[in-house]
Image (cartoon, rainbow, N blue to C red):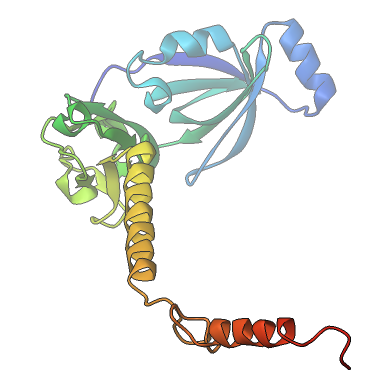
Length: 251
């Protein structure tokens, strides 16, 4: 075996349902199930305190533990990982746990934390570091599962990105994502983008105003004689003078 593995003794259980779960919790136990490619699904009960103690502080649920299943006068042992779990929303204690049986020479699919380290010069220039992935699904041997994957952003400038192909993984760890997948990037804040858009709109408005000012008065569509210096106004004035000179009392 590749490393020291902690053993947890558990009991085989036959009953299911809320009633059984309630009885187990009164005994400070929780219902669980163990399944996998090489074993039949087995219902068990487990002490949640022992489970917490068996998990490595850095590996968390990716810690390989050994279950010693007692029941029907026999005991069987199997290596497992925590595949899923449920917790009480108030007490934050386990109320159900799913284990998947593993073998140390067979690959297993797990999710591992992705941690960004270093200080990005792009952030110093006013950008925002956008972390697209906080976890990565990988495939690895049970005892070769990394506790985390670190990505150095100390060379990441404004508008630049780090892709999966740029990340170094431990030997034997496989990722199914496209190498071109973006892991993180430094983006320009929305406020600055809005300012640039406003400046462009203002420039367009100024250009439109300048074009309107350059258009000659009385252009296409103007009424005849409406232009400055037209003859319509003098003609109207002459008519008024003729009416005023007509002798009074004459029809």
